[in-house]
Image (tube, rainbow, N blue to C red; front, side, top):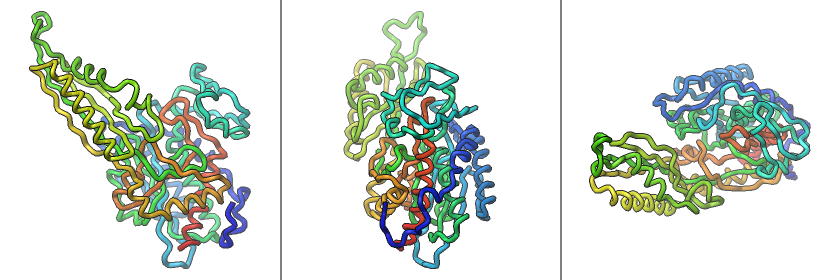
Length: 427
């Protein structure tokens, strides 16, 4: 714990309310799954159901400017309680949508109170087991209250844990105006899970200098680095003929796409064979007919050179496969998706330093890590709003085994409050 003389003395752990779980359980009951096939923003209108609830709850707290806009974004302002004129405006951000990878409809949470170790069998599907041996983070959860689903859906802790934590911290700060902090902005976004979370954000209206996403995993973690990401599309035009008279004529576009996938590395360069700072080339879909097929892939690496190497590998594989199909054609199109936010955050070291101190004051040991993925903060950083990622406590996201700890969420609430104070202290 910090011995900073400017720290407000009464902010011990016991000073905080414990309403974050009630908020969380209220939010996960609302289905907000996003849809990558939809061209609209938000991609699913049901995300606005949660957005409307959050905006109303913020207004009920006294934030008169809280509103849900036509694109599904929620904006609000917590006014400053300090007379200092130079405190940076800090934004707290989480996303409202859940992953398309697993159903988020009809979530039925259960709470395993005072967890004492071992496997957690999910009650509606005994085949769904959160195994202690496969989830090493459970070893740090002894004595905690663990929230899971019943095994038929994901939980939605990614990122409704972050929503609940920001809301609970906002309620605490508003209820304690004696806590000195600068202006705080709240931003809740749609469609983060499909890579479109900040497509329609209005940064001028937001008016923040810096931001933090509450969308990380292990309690105590602050993440200042993400993958850099590209999307790749291989479009194949084959040769069609009547199957009864096709000998020597057909060059099947779907089979060509399958041959390209088969040539991808099997022992490296894939999500299932990499960890740490290793990147990958990952097929995510094949669609098509005999005559034309499309193969979609994602390309991930922490370094630009790594992205380029993987793009070159894909081009080589496509070229080699197409030699066996002389009458067919294939094109490879690679588009940037987001870039490693560390490039931006290294120019603003106080962002991570202040978060680390806030984590200490919340009673945890800070750990700075890299994300094998991306957040809204990845793109926000390159849009002019530097934005590292703070833990929300979510684990096993995008799956029916998703879980979160009550105590970790409460620690995240404390971290947010201390973070607001630290920016004011150090201004």
